[in-house]
Length: 271
Image (cartoon, rainbow, N blue to C red; front, side, top):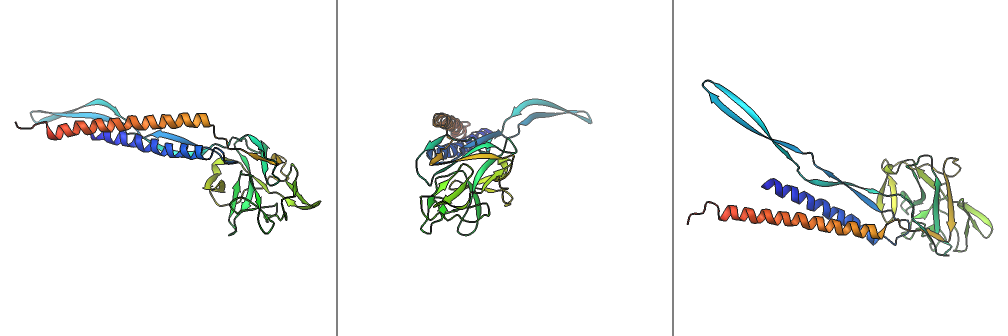
């Protein structure tokens, strides 16, 4: 009976974590460049139950085994994997908004990013092109990370009246101020989310630049942003399913609890 408790509890924990993931996706449905997370739920290995009987025949003992059946020990949320499918492009007409459209990459499982850097010098990557200009005239993210050029240096655009062509060349008052450093990852499994729409590599090594790479092509559109790729109707359906599954496991636990209460208080009771 206790095994049922563990199985139902494992189901509740996995659905609770899945609910947290889906809630975060829905909350960021309007965040530019946000990539939804997808959960991978796996079952624990099944156990084979056997009954062993021993029979005494004089001085010899015979042992027999009988298979009772398999027992599933529950499920768990193994990992959450970002879905890097490109989101829709929305026109904003703000000069500081840049949409990165991925045309091709060396590997079909790869992807492109803007290279950004925090004030502490930490290198990160983002798909969120909803940029701004700080007081010093540098192009930054809304969280204050500097947008980098091909030399991995911040780009000074002076004000919001700068121009960006489809290859990321930035011009200010007719003069070139630098070129956006667009980088690519051969596999999205090599990058991890760090929060605030930022990504870093698992091994800490910088991603190679896609600028001048004949196998990586892209198109940058000024005055546009890439929207989140969250499918709201699908996310809401999955959230309701997660709630219902959690509730079903909860009712199983309540049934076990009532059965154990009777076993402890009523079975064998002397009247």
